[in-house]
Image (tube, rainbow, N blue to C red):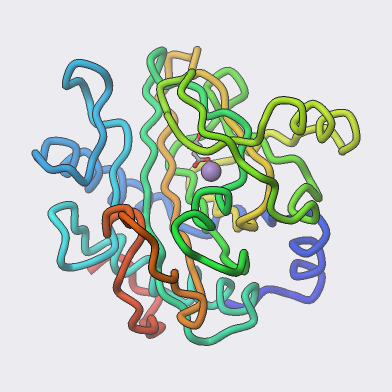
Length: 263
Ligand code: SIN
Ligand code: MN
C-alpha cells in the first residue's frame, strides 16, 4: 500500500495521518483474541493494573523470540499495509521495530497519560534522530469519554523539548513540563481527539505532543502501537539501557511480506 503525495504532505504538516479501515474486522478480532490470550501469561513483558490486576500494557508482540509473541502481530508489522507507508514516511527502506506496545485501557480503571513526546524517552534511550514513526492500530472505537488519544497538530515542528520525569500518575515517564505545555496549548490549534472505527491505523511523528485521559466509560479502549525506526538510527550506547522489549536490539531490516495477516 502506498501513501499519496497529499497524505505525505498532511503528515508533514500535522505530524499524523489517519487511515480508516486499513485492517478488517476479522483481523482486529484476531488481534484482540491474541491479546486476551497473552494477558494471562506471567512475564515481565506486560504491566498489570495495581495489585496484580488485569494486564494493561503488553510489549513485544511482534517478535518470534518473546514470551508475548503473536503470529498475527508478527505478520501485521511486516505487511505492505503497515511497512510500506512507514518506509515512505521515513524515506528509508531499511527499518526495524523499536518496540510494539499494546495499551489495554480498561473501562473505568484505565488512566491518564500526561502530555509528552515519545522521542523525549527514546532520545534518552540513545536515539539521535527523531525520524521514527508509529503506527497506532485502533482495536476498539475510542471515544473522548473513554480516554482516547489527543494530538496537537503541528507540534512535531517544535522539535525535541526537554522532558521531565513525572511520577504523579499511574504511568511514570518523561513528559513535557507544565509551563512549556501551557505555552504550547495557547499557541497551537486545538488538540484533536483520535477517534475512529476499529481497524483504523494512525501514523504519527515521534515528536508530536500527545496525551490521553482517564477511561470514564463502560467500554475498554484497546490500541496497539508499532514503532518503526531506521536501522541507521539505532540507539547509541547508554548506561543502564532499558530492557529489550522497550528498546529493541534486533536491528535486522524488516522484509515486507504478504498482506496475509491471518494464516
Ligand atoms: C502513549 O502515548 O504512549 C500511550 C497513550 C495511550 O495509549 O493512551
Ligand atoms: Mn506516547
